[in-house]
Length: 393
Image (cartoon, rainbow, N blue to C red):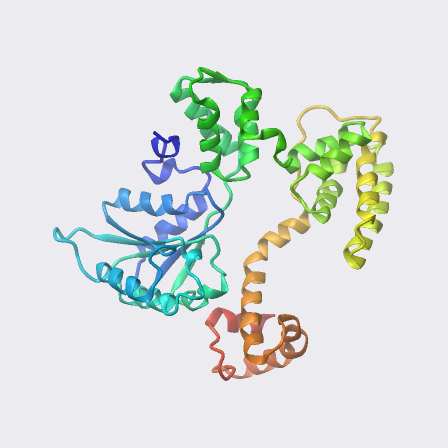
């Protein structure tokens, strides 16, 4: 039996690392009104479908589901929509789940409209599940659906879940195995459990060496493995390799090092480190502005040489900080995605790029939008949130 099924949560309280999304989903259920849906979005393996299944189980509701990537024709969706309008034989309440919304193709004419119609006519709560709420092809649905976003499961939470499974299975493991698998999974709890079952088959105990069957050594290094190597290793080659093996773009690596160097280095080492960072920043900008990628090697070598100046090390556990710039990008991700779809919609009608819309049209659109409550562009239907984006831009 698959461990992802065997150790599936029985209640919402058992779900790992999704407290905020659970509170939003239960609040939405408690205040459900006909004609509105909840869109459960987020990365793979974070428990999107599981959240809906668990809500139905806890509340004693009959779960009716459809996979949008399989049944995605208008006629199929309309046939399914009958279950959203009729009560079961025993009068039991229902919960409607339409999964894998990302699988709807632009060629499936009428499918999105049929789902919108289902939402409006359903007598029961409707949950849509997909990775990205802001996909352009799903734009017509956003006026009917509230976004509830699941985030990547934190590595410590994944590690604890893996330890609980190992204990339940009576399998011993090296202290580093659960943590390594958790970081390797990059927030995907389902993937971590699958990997753990793979390396545990037929064994009473597992070690780091068992992870080699997963190709563990070939996986990209995570940022929390990369930073100590760059700043503390004392080896130019080790720092250089950590940078090239990392699963982060060059700009992001630079900001991680810039944010955390002063936490890892002693006060006497900081001036030399930030002198090297300032020089690395010069080459980073040359790469970014001129697309001259040969300067990337210079930037990497300057970052990797920071550890050579580490003469007064700090000891003990040092928590890493997320760079402010990356935090800002995370906070504005939804707004930027909405801006992309809104300007893309206008660009299709005006036969120009999103950049031209933003540069040449937006100043005038803002003025019109602020002075005209019924603002619209002929041939382009703007949703409430898109109109607000233009007004507040």
